[in-house]
Image (cartoon, rainbow, N blue to C red):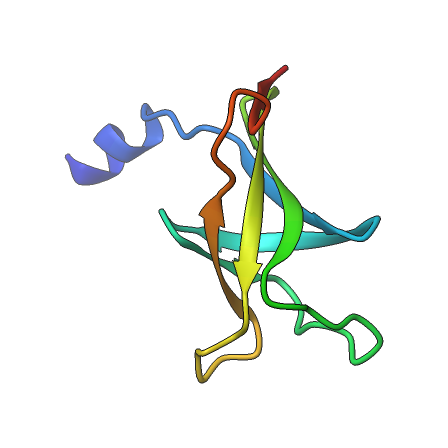
Length: 95
């Protein structure tokens, strides 16, 4: 019974990226105030506090872009970054 219910289900295609100074980073997970990168930050890419970036989330082909301020990584994980959305009318761009 469970196998049949799961085989008829639907899962959205979700992808995400973070753009910092023109560098595209793939996302594994996004929360309300953090994101987890697929790969650790390169040692060549440093983050100032605050550092502005673009967060792009795509769900079933529909993109949403939000400008965020990254804060210094206070997490034990080098792949987890904390952010807050930039306030203002131009902060969120729907495509």
